[in-house]
Image (cartoon, rainbow, N blue to C red):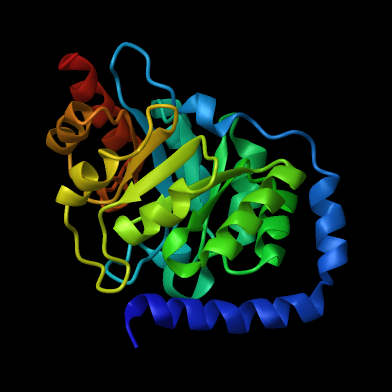
Length: 265
C-alpha cells in the first residue's frame, strides 16, 4: 500500500467514527449558519507580476517533522499574515500531519485573510465540518475522488458557500477536473503515491488549463528560483509550507521570499 492509500484508509476510519459522534445533519446545519466566506480566489490574483503566496501551517508531514504539537499554529499564522501572506493553508489531517479542525478554527478567529482547509477530503461530512470551523476554501484532491465525487463535492461546496480548490497531479487528474466548471486549480508537482517531486509537471499540466482558471503551484518551491520558473509559465500563485516551516521563523522566511520576488519585477 502506497503512502496516499494509507492516508485515505486512515481518513475513512476516522471520519466514520466522527460521524457517530456528530450527526451529518447537525454539522451541515452548523456549516449553513456560518457567515459569508472571504474571497479566496480574489486574494490570489497577482498585481504587478508579483507572486501571491498561500502560506501553510503544518506540524509534521510524512517526510518532515516541524515540531509536532509544540508548534504554535496561531502564532505562525499571524506571523505569515504580518509578513504579507495572501492566505493561510491549515493542515487538518491528524494522523500523518498532526493537524486538527481546532487549529483551523483558532487560526480563522485570529487572522483577517482567507483560510484554506487542507486535508484528504473523501466525504461530504468533511466539507461541512471545514465550513463550520470557518474555512473560506477547501482542497479537493482529484487523485482520490472519481469524476462523480469530484463534481458532487464541488456542488456541495458551492451550496454551503466554501470555495472549492481542486488539486491535480497528472494528466488523468487534469482531464477529470477540466470537465467541470472551475475558477481555481492547483498543480501539485509532488507524486502523492511516492511523495517525490517533479517540477516539470508544472509546465506539462499548465499548458492545457484555460486562462480563465487561476492556477496555483503546489510543492517543490524551495526559493525564488522556483517562483521565477512558475512565473515564466504564467503562474503567479503558490502554496508553500515546508520552506517556511523548517526555519526558526516562518514569517521571516516568507517576508524574505516575497522581497526577493518583488526585486525581480
